[in-house]
Length: 398
Image (cartoon, rainbow, N blue to C red; front, side, top):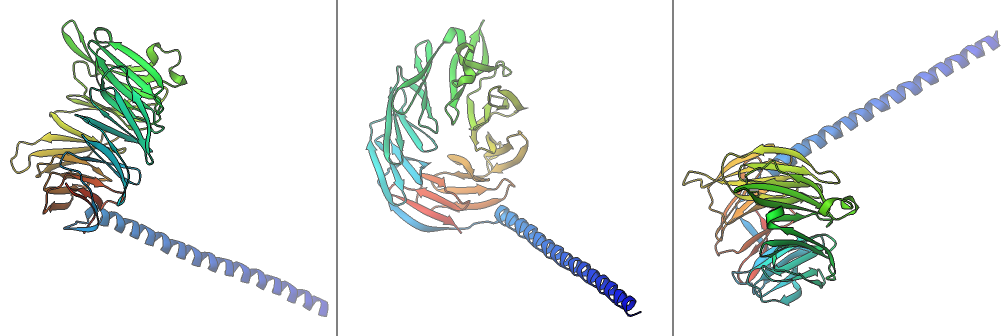
């Protein structure tokens, strides 16, 4: 009898023990799920708040954090480079890292052209034969082309490509930063057409060229993609793709907007192409109005049109890389420069500046007390360099 009572007590203890363990686990999981849910809800709320704050926040003034004394003059230009900015003019080029001038090189140029990619910057004087290549430490190389330079670009490893012109013949030449010629491609005006623009991929392996051809008295456009990697081996003239859908439209804008995407814009058409070993048309739309200006980033393409309104002289439209319209806004500033600053649009002239978000919100509308030469966006949406004749100011919008 006592053994039976003992067995019953043991079974009851085991049952109670099991119930207690399961109940405890259930309570723990319920509490944990509740806590995780609260954290997720808070994260979503914070994310939405940050998004709306960044999108709709407006600025009314500028706070000057730093003033850098320079002798630039009104003919100077500024481009983001390295950790800060490069300043160039007809008389030379320099690299500034904060308040320090890291290097300064003198040049005598009539029409300087500059391009940057990765750690390298290249400068040349249009219609001459020399290209100077720099990195953050100073001059990294020099290139001398066979014929006068119409346009040049630099790739991320210091390779430069140049479009050259000699009477009825044009050339595309590529060099490494030590000045060694890698490629020399010749095109005849009567056979291939006249190259009006080109773009070099960041890795230096592909070039896309926009040609205008004249046949039987008619104009035709042709885009050719050249590949100088192993993909182009065996292809005639290393052309791996051609596109002729623009027909009689001239296509003055062609650009590698990212490593895998090219944008081309004609008089009444805009196209994006996927690059790689088999380039293809990605998206294409018709453009009704006459395009006055194009600006772009890796994510967006902006078009500027004249607007028949004295108060709003321009209309700006922004497209994503699928060519979906994300913004159409009338602009009441007669700007001289326009570019993307993050997801925003920066427009300015010598006395006024505006920033418009991709939602169409005018986040910044400001009149400077003294004339400016250039505004350069920095990393954050509200940080800029403001260049004047005698100084560069690092400012934060307030």
